View (tube, rainbow, N blue to C red):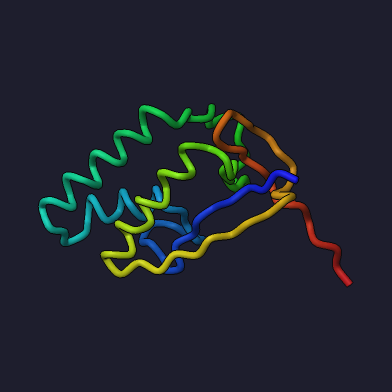
Length: 123
């Protein structure tokens, strides 16, 4: 069975109404955070690597409710561990979520899927 994974940041990031992933927190830290210059440069290089190597899905095709998940075997996902470590260094708490069924997939590439969560049955 293939698993899909995602990191979520446990803190609320200003400007977002729900939990965010590593990228939103990393850009917030880069723009608003008090960082050592060396770490700022390293974080900037990390984000540039992701911009170059992770396809950007066509936004108009992705519903606002969709959640992005990464394929377990993806090189991009393996590199995200380093991004998570950088955020932890600046006191962000990060959780890893794993799912075999992330929802109704609305986008997919070699590294990631965007899926709309299934509705829960009301009892």
